[in-house]
Length: 218
Length: 247
Image (cartoon, rainbow over all chains, first blue to last red; front, side):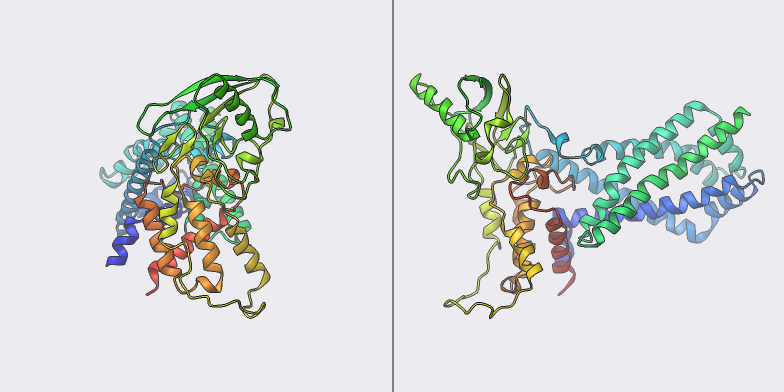
């Protein structure tokens, strides 16, 4: 027990928990994206509605949902705690500070990209999750079509995905560094997987509003 | 060359500092950055002003005493050099150079560009050593260490403890320093006895001294005068996990 407490009290321990929570959230992205691909099936939304129904009511999914919410809360809480500690570690700022010479944009702005993704998540939950899960909406396909017909919503969706890509670009490789796995020949492997992940996942999600918006133009 | 320097002047730890402008003439491109400051200080003394205080000792990049933020970069422009190894040829005639002390809660300013870096000593005292009786000199090759491991340990041991990692980090994190020290001893047979206690207690003291935590921006690696790799930070994280999950 003493070890568990000292693990949590250590900044490295918090980072490890945060990276594990982050990787768990990444697995959610993969599942969510692969499920959403049902939107592309040309059957007037039958398979997508079937999938939505399954996701809203299957007991396994419902119990994993609790874990997922816990993962989000843990990731955000630890991120916020460390962010505050890190800001406090330099009370007097530099008047000239060229951090940008040495670090990429996404590494300096994970709090920003994460906050924008969180904002989008709230909008997204209100729009799709609440109707399906709590208000008995069964035709999710119609809801998706309606949402993607609005150019304003599509822009918000795409902007959030750009932020998600930035967030993942830093965070995915960073998680492996924090877990101590970035070493020797694995560095190339993890960095390659990271590129595929931060590029493909957001592109996959982005293909949906683009496809449906273009199809309304016809 | 003629230069304008904006130097952080602060009389005492508790007094309020500010940037003050100085003009320096006749700067040779062959001078080191510290020699340029010496020239300015001689001028200041002649004018009966207090010279600028800054830390320095060996002036050949091995002691880790010097260090200042030069135009927003720890040890100034250029890679793999300490402030004393920075030459004025990196600047152009008419340039304005902003010179500030390392800034971190853990490194309070003592005077002008001098900061108190004893927080790093406290982290070292928590385990950055090997407590075994070494006895007399042993024969060479009695203790066999494979070359790649010896090289890796040596790369970590190159850390001169200047604090540029903290100064350049957006979070004022000491992780690269602690990683270098832990890594060096974790790789060698002499460091095995205290391997777990070392990582736990050095990290605990690091946190106590109000350094920030690492967010893997890798700014430290870019500014380290000894170019210590962040792969040592990954090893530090591994050592921490190992210490926590094994009995």
